[in-house]
Image (cartoon, rainbow, N blue to C red; front, top):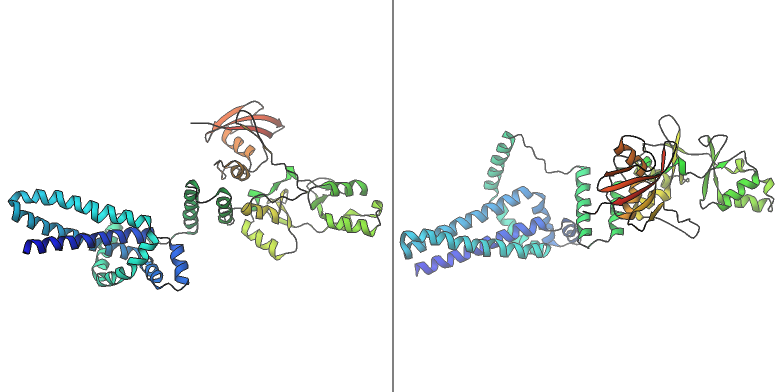
Length: 420
């Protein structure tokens, strides 16, 4: 009779081990976002699990302590039973049988179940785990103190808090993983990435480079200026005097149309210079999120980007920033000029002035964005020289061939991924 009671005790201890193993896996794998949402809805179990996760170190310590205690006790009981039956050789049988039982029923089975339904499992076991954490608190605190002291001997410190960049990297890596598994579509992935990037990018990173700015020369006739405004796909255009860098104002197409109506169609009566508004100059180091806030607060959605010497580097609009989040915004008047064309040999002809960020988004590539802003800048950076037409380079698993060059500017590049 005593042997059967001992066997029932071993089965109960294995059940407890399975419960603790599954609880550890479920609570650590549960989605904190979903638990937080349920807690805000008033779910008491979710609130309990949230509090347990807040002190994850103590929680894991409690579960590991409890799990090891029951496993050791179960092994001791099993050894005593098998020694009674088989003598000294019972130690070997006990080792083999308990290893098999613990691995299958106390580890693999409960952890597989927990990982398949972590949120539901965590909500179910949370109320049962909480009193165990309280009961074993003195022991786990002592163990934590001992472990922390030993880690400090090796120069390891831990504060448990994520920095801004680390936290955002965790989110980005999670989104990338879900995208690779097909649970997040590319558009949503890019939108989330754009939002995360707002605090890490400056206006220089996404501005329209000065070589691509369409502007007006105040010295041209009123007729020429009005025609350029009406034919342009852009609503706002910089107005310069003499040199393109000498911008004296910004012309809005609506103001020109109003002036046309007021002049009863007589273009010669229109003075474009008087219609121009004062230009807004911003430093190229302005943070993207800061500029977004400035655009939303101000009445202007158009700014000129200047360097530390006051020279115009490009321009940025509210639409440019929004496109970093939602992707390209086009209407019936936009010209579809993306600067990328696919060739028959699976290579791409790309304008050298295109930003690397836009190329990565359009083609789902992973070219580095921290070395240069444009694709031409990246080639020059890696080549460590200004390349000539026809030159080819290979880096980052891509082959780059210079197709067109003007002075020191790389105009067009053929880019082809290298298939492994």
